[in-house]
Length: 285
Image (cartoon, rainbow, N blue to C red):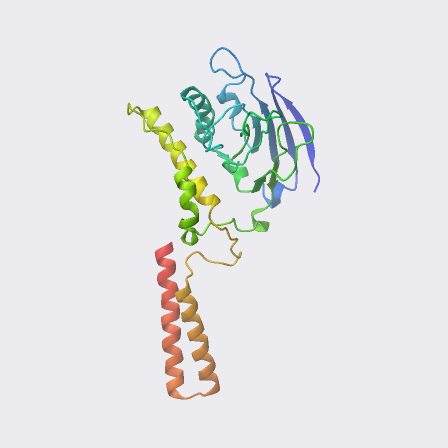
């Protein structure tokens, strides 16, 4: 594959983009261009209180777009266990809402820290956020922090992009296997925000977002995960596995002893098996 790159300078020095072009298409698709944008937001004393407004950060280009940003902002979607003030939530929600309204997907794993202060007083946090627009989201395989920091308080972030054909199925937490006895103490120790006294729209949304994300993160962290086979089907069940075994057993018997009774039993088992598959597909789709 032949690639060509060009640098795109923006009106603000805290924002820089690199365009990558390929005539053969990227990730085995017809998309020929990918833009990677680096954003660093600086505090300001005037609205929007950051150096770059959200509408300039999330300005969708006509091709694949990946945004890697140090927003210097805290949001419950990225750091569900952090405590937030109303001002912090309002400011960060402005950028996250702008991302969702312009069809950008949030790539961070909730609760995975990216910023580790050098002092021993401050807690780790999530300041480095990654977003992909809708066309690029199909090619995002993973977001991870597998590397250690050398001389910075921010961890290197690895975003893996590849063709969907080569991707493994995502890990699926089997919540039915959750050990409620082991998670009970964690649930009792988990602190939630008090219910807002005044039922205002912003306060209610903030309360629900923080509480639900914090609870979901806690439950998922105590749930075993498994990666299904690429050939697995969501509509399959143990009952259909038993019906398949019975059908194959009767089929072998009918081939070994070609009596009318064995032949009729094989046809009955086959009819029940394929009918169960058809009903499962219909219910799932």
